[in-house]
Every structure is written in structure tokens, then in C-alpha cells.
Amino acid sequence: MFLDEGGNLDFSNHGTKHFILTGVTKERSLKLHAPLAEYKYDLIERGLNIEYFHASEDNKAVRERVFQMIKSDLKNVRIDSMIVDKQTVQTSLRQGIKFYPHILEKLIRYILQNLDLTKFSMLLVITDQIPLTYRRQAIEKSIKAALSALLPPTLPYRVFHHDSKSNFDLQIADYCCWALYRKWERSEERYYRMIQQAIQSELETKLE
Image (tube, rainbow, N blue to C red; front, side, top):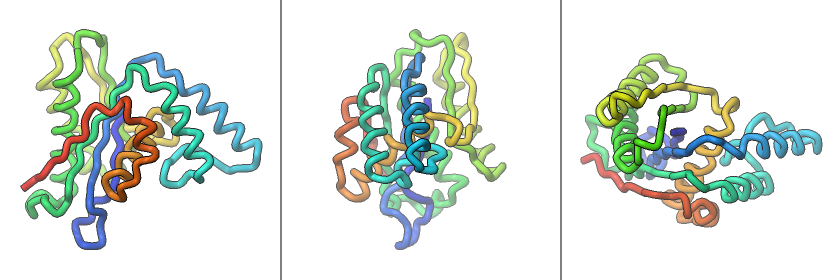
């Protein structure tokens, strides 16, 4: 399960309207790693100084190609998103240390409740690096609370925080979350439609 977010935690009028948390859950084998690596080095050989794929920063041609690659390998992939209209969030929950873990736990619980857990021998949950120690601890606590409550005792799990630059699946999750964010924040659905077949849920959540 690879987790990514869209929007920001600014609850003023200058912030984004929505905050979106997306989970991309998939089984091994992970077939896109080699093609993405090949494409990255194709781009480098052409003179594009690209270190990793990031939907909001990549140019239109790169973004189009990466989405086409993701679209071609959506078998056994599920995409779930928690969508929050930030203006509905009560003041007491607007601090990132409270808001983010709360949403994260709700999303993970929903995904796990809709998975056939008997199919798996282990569950790995991977997020991007979280630089602030206190925030990382709060987030990890929420993840483990959801996993411990819903996973059978015989199913082990691991939680990791990787730099997205080092992990193609976090980059894929970034692309999927970006497509959902553009749909909800800007009513742009082109890239959303490219991954729509794998989208299992878009959960509109109000934290009143």
C-alpha cells in the first residue's frame, strides 16, 4: 500500500479547497519498475535532467507517457482516496498533527475492510519521507493502530518511509493522487479517466 497526498494543510483562504489522501494497493510482481527506469534513462540520454517522476513538475509529454504506462498495468491494482473539503473541518482538527493522522487512519481502515486479506502473506505500507519526527511518529501510530485492529494476527505487516525519488511505486501513487486532485480541485478529468478503471473509492469526508 503506497500512500500519497494532494493539496496542502493551509486552512486559510489561501490554501487549497481540498485535501486528498490516496492509497495505491497492489500485489507483487511490480511490473512497471523496469519500463519506468528505461524511460527515465531515455529522457536523460535526450538531455532532460530528470531524477524521478513527479506529476506536478513533469512536462506534459513526460506526464502523458507515464500515465499511459500506468494505465497499461492496472491489473490487481486498487486506488482509494479520501477527499476532504477543508472548510468543513472543525477548528480543533485543523492542526496537521491531528488532521493528517486522523484522515490517514480512516483511509487505511476503509481499504483493509475491502481487501480479501486471506490472499496475502504480508502487508507493506510505504509513505514518502516525513521530515518532522513528531509528525512521523503520529502518522506511524495511526497506521499501526489501523493495521493492528483489522489485520489477522497471522498476517505480518511493515511500515516504511521512503524518499519517493527512490521508489517507483510512490511515484506512481503521486501520479494517481495528482489525477484525483485535479478532478476534485479543478474539475479536470483527462488523467483521472486514464486510471479510472482501478479507482475503487472516492470517499468525500466532512470532519465537522
